[in-house]
Amino acid sequence: EKGGYPNFMAKEINEQPHAVADTLLGRTDETGRLVLDELRISEDDLRAVDKIVIIACGTAAYAGMVAKYAIEHWCRIPCEVELAHEFRYRDPVVNERTLVVAISQSGETMDTLMAVKHARELGAKVVAVCNTHGSTIPRESDAVLYTHAGPEIAVASTKAFLAQITACYILGLYLAQLRGGTYADEAQAVMKDLHEVPAKIQQVLDGLDRVREIARFMADTRSVLFLGRHVGYPVALEGALKLKELAYIHAEGFAAGELKHGPIALIEPGQPVFVIVPSPSSEHGLHGKVVSNIQEIRARGARTLVIAEDGDEDVVPFADVVIRVPQTPALLAPLVTTVPLQVFACELATAKGLDVDQPRNLAKSVTVE
Ligand code: F6R
Image (cartoon, rainbow, N blue to C red):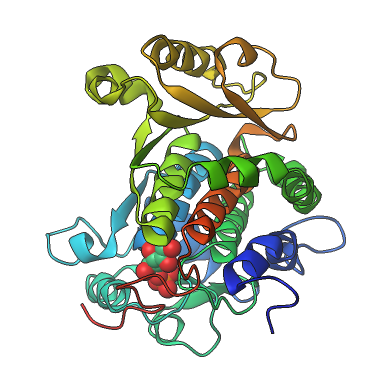
């Protein structure tokens, strides 16, 4: 069943090129326009949407945080991301013109389900982004956009995360196309870029021997920090979550810009810090700022593990280790930069002799509030 891999997690990490490719499949017509027949919400209702609220928990919420950057950029609709269990218990501003996107791999997460019901009571239209056919959350939603990652057995989520980002991007591009506006014409170009992502993920997977080796050496590590900016920020949060869940190591993700507002006080000699570096060619222009952050923490003794694009030489003087990923458009970068962090956590946990598929205290679907 594990297809020659030592555990389901390793198998699922390696299935990610397919998870993304299969999620993209059949979502465009022969001219390259997005067609989402499954989205049973009328075009008029979708055109009237003036706010998007993404609700989810855990890794799925981090996929939502990534999607927010892309959806606001492409659609120019305000987009919030909220943990489902928080959304439900405050007094959220939601009405008939709100599109709620509920992301859930299992489709059974009680916190997310309750939030879906709450949103619908308030009049919102709800689209589920889900990996499990016939599960409860899609049934309780107005429409569903399935991720086609295939069954995810390991408790900690990996391939579903990349598929969730992919599906949310498809939704965002579809809305942009439907509503017209500046980015409507970009939808097809971005879809083309997305179709190139599975091969890039494969390239990352094929080059991770050094990450595995480092992870094995770090089995005694007590704490690891993760820094990222823009879409790299939720990737940092996800990298930290994987390490907590799988290896039981204290880990925290930060927005790199927040460093000087507090977390830099944590840096002491030998502290390992992963840094997810944006592409030097990204239009947001954050590359130089993140390189400066690496320089700052290195000067204070941090051990810097830097995830950077091929050809980015600026990071080299300040990196103890450079982990390379192929050149990828800024918004799509999480689909490649997340992968080394998953492998790192999986390998480190394995080196500690832990059961990576069944971490202690966790369940695959959390069906209680
Ligand atoms: C993390 C993880 C959890 C889930 C969360 C939501 O590795 O597995 O954080 O992402 O419990 O689960 P779903 O997506 O099934 O609603």
